[in-house]
Amino acid sequence: MAPTPESHGIDPPAPSSRLPAPSLTFIDRILIGASVLIMLACGAALWQRDALRAHWWARRLSTAQGFDEQRHYVTLLASLGESAVTPVARLMEQEDPRTRILAAGILAHTACMPARNSLVKALHDPDVEVREAAALALAFGHETQVVPALAAVSREADAQAAAAACVALGMIASNIALPALLEAAEQHPEAAVRAQAVEMLGMRRAPEAEKVLKERLTDQGRFSVMLYGERRLSGAIAFADSQQGTQTPALSRPADRTVASVADDALKQLVPVDASQDPISRSDPRPGTPPATQGMPPPRQ
Image 1 (cartoon, rainbow, N blue to C red):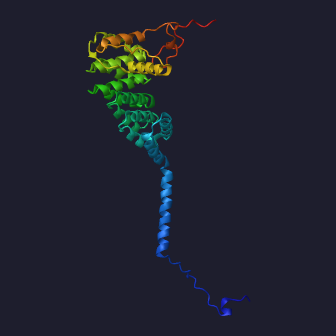
Image 2 (image 1 turned 120 degrees about the horizontal axis):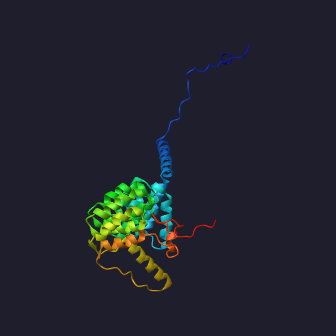
Image 3 (image 1 turned 180 degrees about the vertical axis):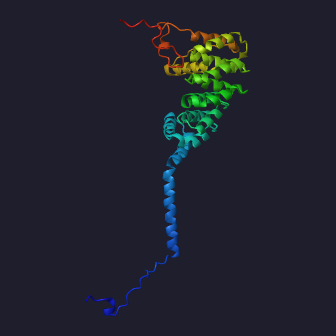
């Protein structure tokens, strides 16, 4: 017969008895709570690491001085996508227009609604370079998604913002942007806006614009500001002079011009040219450009 606890004079344990739980001191409870908080903080930091990086890099960009340093932080912020939108949008409110221009370029890499709203707001910026940087960011980064917002701005009484919207509409490759641009060329009350829309129609080289451009040949509305294409050309000439140590005469434009004169120049761009006379047109990537083979001899059989 097998021995039992009773045979040795030992009482068997009660079936429901448990070992007593160790008591925690006040210090133990504090240490455990602190450990839990640290773990939660580390988890949150890992979850929001891109947002934390974006805020830090945006701050560094706002104080960067040299070109290489600025390019470094622009590249880092652009790589973060939507995580960088909030801090970069705040850069659009910086006093230095160069910082605002860099911020607009970063927002071109994120086709989300907050970035789009920030760029549309920048079309009202007091600095023309910032307005045009925002327009290009919208055209190349957001494209057709922003056409309704650009169409609305192109109808505003604010001539500077409306002209910037026309630049963006003119740079969008899709023909979805064309009706709003045609409307601005025909109906906007400010001559400078109509002229900007007409210039962009010429740059697009869209055959659909011919009728409107011919009608603008009688538009005697006068304006005195430089248009987008003229500013780009003037800037390119100045840059080339700085690299070569030369001095090219400044771009000559009458101080006071008519929309009709701009329409005349735009119509000339719609006329197909012989590739031997204008080799640039063969590889021009702008919307509506004649194909590269136009004006070339037929292939040999």
